[in-house]
Length: 257
Image (cartoon, rainbow, N blue to C red; front, side):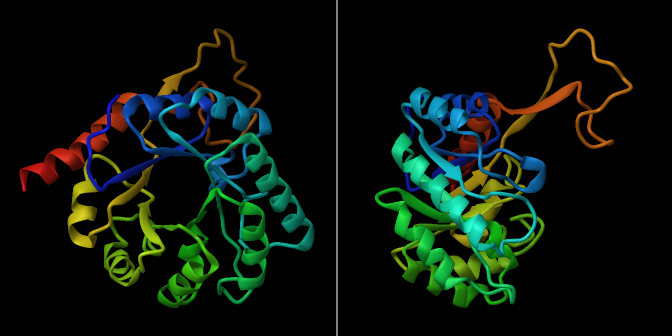
């Protein structure tokens, strides 16, 4: 799909290579490839990364660097793992990496983020939604720009980006030329235009997933591989239809104003 020339950028949170390809077909500018979506996103397998790199031609590939779910205060061992994962992404030809470290007090961990940034090289760097747990977001934005991050993914420290519009507006107004604000969490075709109009944010992160019925013909009802509330007869996959629909909704509304 040919992308219309404008200032918008659309990133898809892709939970698989299949979702990456759907994002590309739907016209996304880039994907953030993640595993462990139920944990907020963890580093995908190397097989996922190299396969996505081989198959994505029009859409940039970014990879989350997060060794586990939970908080964003990491041990020395976890830092070694994250640095190795960034090195592996660089060797695989990935376009960008996504990570973030906080201190136990909820501030940007300057030292640990700087150590990881030293491994990034020519790849882009996004500070992920660890930002939504930091104590002083406006001060943190200045620190992240100084560290060299290209963008911050944030919901405005609320459960969804739509609810976080007040802080997203302040962050967008404060952001320097060296760092961009990307609104994410709960962004969809119904609210993307509202978020843009009320914040001036032009970069958006969303999943555009739909439930797909399993092709498995037999599945014992007595054994579950995941949580007790998970329906394992379905899986959630990004679809090109929803990606394209969400992008078109913003562009068409913008062109109409």
